[in-house]
Image: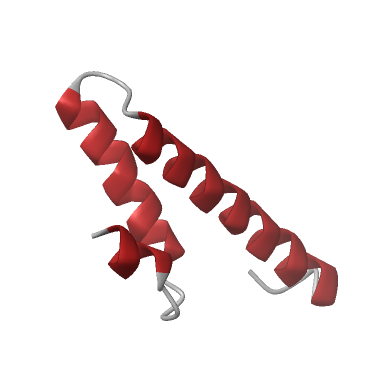
Length: 60
């Protein structure tokens, strides 16, 4: 499963981030590998948003 999520070239990072958030809620405790992947996905989403607004600030 980790290989599938690591190879997300489709641009569906938001779906993976929500999946990991839901998975961490369902387990009721923090698993370090899930939390690391969740943080990295959140950072990549923030970077994508910054790059998008940097290139064209009026396009969302």
